[in-house]
Image (cartoon, rainbow over all chains, first blue to last red; front, side, top):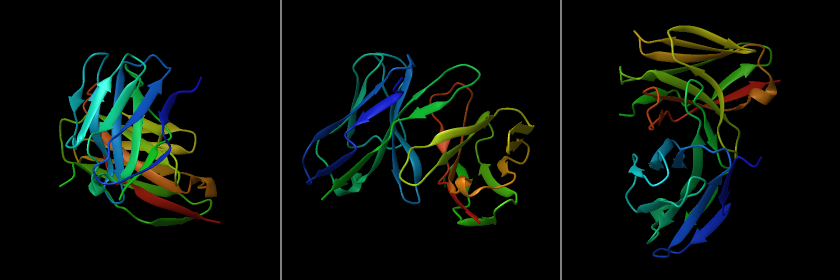
Length: 113
Length: 111
């Protein structure tokens, strides 16, 4: 049982380049999330998907797009990377009900030069 | 102003002592609160969740919620060096998709 798997673990981009971060979960969760984490800023929500076929903006969506490909997969795309997008990115999925809990992937360290 | 506030620390506590971590929130509608632990270079993992006023205990961890004063705390009894990590407080509406995280408190347990 792998949980939440995200790739790649590290990536260096030049300003203006594009890339897609991949995320997959095998826990049959409806909800999936993309967060970024910056020093002193905590975790900030970029986009989320409450169910297959739906996506919504979070706190910091500018410069990003997402796709909920199916129930398992939720990808994050940077169309034209900027240095301000240098961050650690976490994908997460969530259980519902009374014992709600976020399960995080291992993170992607992205540097934009 | 961030909706969930934490003292960034660092907080240093001797081994075996009680570590006390605090968090305040501004949205009175928040109903669900969580404490996540994050080791350096790793992803966050859930330690405790709390929804009702009062205390909730799980092993060495106790979460406390006071909705009237809008604060949440986490107590770690018999602190161990393995408790050294950053602790993230998060809050939101029950069942709501959006959780708001604090910036985290870095805790160091001194052997």
